[in-house]
Length: 311
Ligand SMILES: [Zn+2]
Ligand SMILES: [Zn+2]
Image 1: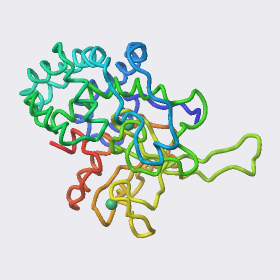
Image 2: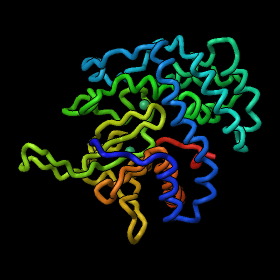
Image 3: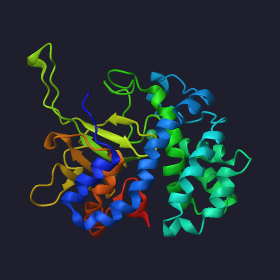
């Protein structure tokens, strides 16, 4: 808490220095990741003018309902259009998206509110509706999902930021308020997890905690939430023998994958107790691509597919 976080560029430069083999992949994604971060900051005012996130409710949280689920996103078409106009030229540089550029332009830059309905279906976790709307837009659902990671993400991140207090923990953390493996704000599955650094209570040295609390990070709206270490975020199985760890031999800088022996899904994890600085989480997830490859060889599936482990 209160510690400065590295930027996308700083995090990727650090990874490239340690793993030169990943340099060209990191360079291919860096402009899109930096633009997403810049757009999130730029769109804050227009998103706030268009929509207010509902107040956090313990009752809804207890039912496992994310904050944005069921919320009307009417008003977001304009910021989505701005994000798409800036992001589509970058996305179209990637081969699997190039052939869908015209359809994505129609969808996001057109006059209708189809983009709002698609993002509503996404945050409501309504797969059939999402697939139907993707079909209407003539874009394969997984390609559309990837485009939304960069076009809807800055807009949803600006909206999700409304729920984060200036100081202290988010309302869904602490106690057993939110126990789901998916995001309490947008319902997306986590793209990466961290283990917290040691915490020192200045007023009372005896309360110094050992750290190591697990925190899942949403790749769509960038919210984070605490989660039990012995539980699988995907299938919910719990116990000492559920989660296994996969890591490189030698000094791994706290980087590893936690995978579930039951459902064979994995999520990258960074143990912040083994690092000096806090990396940018999106950039760090990309920077652990070597572990995605090792996981794929073991027949494991990413908890939430990203472009680099999807195509
Ligand atoms: Zn989220
Ligand atoms: Zn599982």
